[in-house]
Length: 111
Image 1 (cartoon, rainbow, N blue to C red):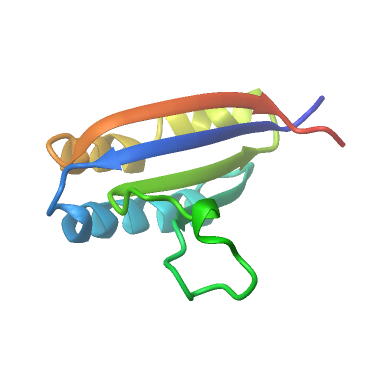
Image 2 (cartoon, rainbow, N blue to C red; image 1 turned 180 degrees about the horizontal axis):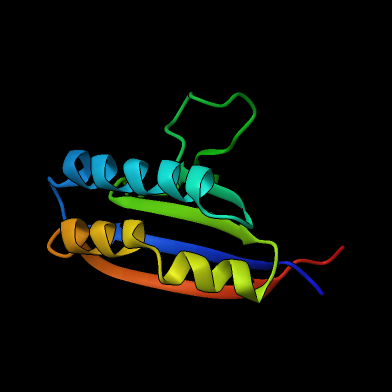
C-alpha cells in the first residue's frame, strides 16, 4: 500500500506566530516520537530574501504568517493513530484562536 501524505497550509493570525509555533512544535515532536507509523512531520516556513542563495524574490512567499506541514504516514492505520492522538487534540485546543485558515491536501506518495 502507498504511504499517505498530508500537505497542510496554515494561515496564522497576525501577531500570533510565536504562541502558535510553540504549540505546533510540541505537537510535531509528539507526533514524530510517539505515534507508530508517522514517518515524517516536517514544519516549514517561507524563506526570506537573501536567506537562500540563487532564489529569485518571486519564489519567496509574500505572507510571513503562513506555515506549511508535510506529514507522511506508513498507511491508513498510522494516519488513524495520528488523528485520534491526544497530542492532536491538545494542539487543536491551543491553536484554535491562533489560526485564521487552514488548507489540507491529502496525497499518496509515489514510490
